[in-house]
Structure formats: C-alpha cells, structure tokens
Length: 239
Figure 1 (spheres, rainbow, N blue to C red):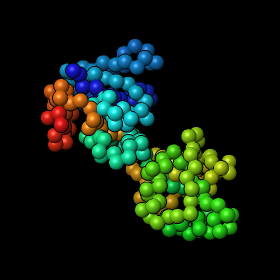
Figure 2 (cartoon, rainbow, N blue to C red):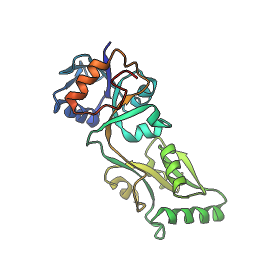
Figure 3 (spheres, rainbow, N blue to C red):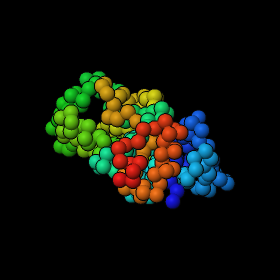
Figure 4 (cartoon, helix red, strand yellow):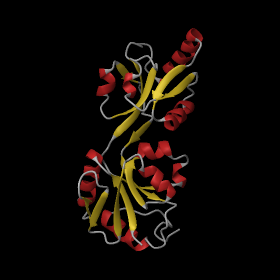
C-alpha cells in the first residue's frame, strides 16, 4: 500500500509546495498537461501524489482518503469541526501566509475595535430593526471569534464571490475575509479592525487520523525523516 499525499493542483500554492518538498530531497512533479491531475514523486518510495484543489484537501483528509495533505490552515479550521480529532498538523510550511480579518467601512471613524463593532451593531439594530450583516466565506471561524469577544447583534451572510465588494453593493455592512496585504480591502474603502486577526493562516502539512496507516507506516517514517517532521504519538504505529 502506498501513502497518498494530497497537494494543491494549481497556482502559486502548488509551486511553493513543490519547492518546499524539493528543498528537502523529495521531487514532486505534475504528470502530463496542466488539466491532468496525476503526478509523480521521486525521493520518497511508497509515496503517491494526489493533486486536488486546496479546498478539497480538508474533506479528503477527514475522510481518510489521503494520508497527508497540504492546504491552508484556514480551510482546515473552517471546514472541520473539532479539527484536532480529524487531522494532526505536522509542519507549518512558511508560505501562503494570509490573515482572516474583520473590516468595516473606513467612514466609520468611531469603529476601530471589536468592542466598537459590538456597540455599533447594537446601535444599527436599534436604528434599522435588523442585525448588522457581515459577509464572509468563513462562518465557523468568524462566529467563534465574535462569540469569544462578546460581539452580538450581527448576522453572517454567505459570500462566495468578491467579499470585499459586498459593502459597496449594499449586501452587507462589514466583511470578514482573508487577506495578505489588506490592499484590496483598502481599495474598497474598508479598514481592518485593530487587534489580532481571526486566524493567521499559512500552508501546513496535515496528517489524517482516519486514514489506514497500518500498511503505510514505513513510507511515512521514511518521508518524515527526510522532511525533518516529528510525527504525533501513535501515528507511525498505525493507531
């Protein structure tokens, strides 16, 4: 049995993942044309490359259909409730950095913190008769963050397109979105609230707890040694 390694199938995240493994003596290659989702692995016997979209990898890890996977930590935490029970984070990879932040209109001069947002949300509901809307793709992470900071009187509205444009289009009053520099938010006349982000994401190598490890322990141990990755207790023994 081979060990299945899931890697993003395109773009900068795929390229940086290939570079990260290559710097550690494991060469990953796409086989064939760009639209083909097959690949090869050199330098790690018993490891099979599986090319997937970054957003599919958390689901495949949780189902145990791949043993290891590279994706953004934001996607794992958002998609998998109680994510520690499903996957183990083996190594932050040092690229793909982006922060999940909450941003409000720059014209809201009195709203700079979560406490300010809580007060503004209460005033908004009293004035308009409905809750302040926050557009986001990250419902679980944002809801947990706002709850932890005591923010109420808001509703999350789903945004699968250009989230930063929802305020201008009057479909939301604020946004929670992933950003590397904040430039797109500023271009849309939004400002990021002060304080730590909802989540500081980066590309991370994860292991699936539900995968069938009993026949993949030898490839896992050899790969982990080559990558300089410490394995969680019990994983290398197939438990």
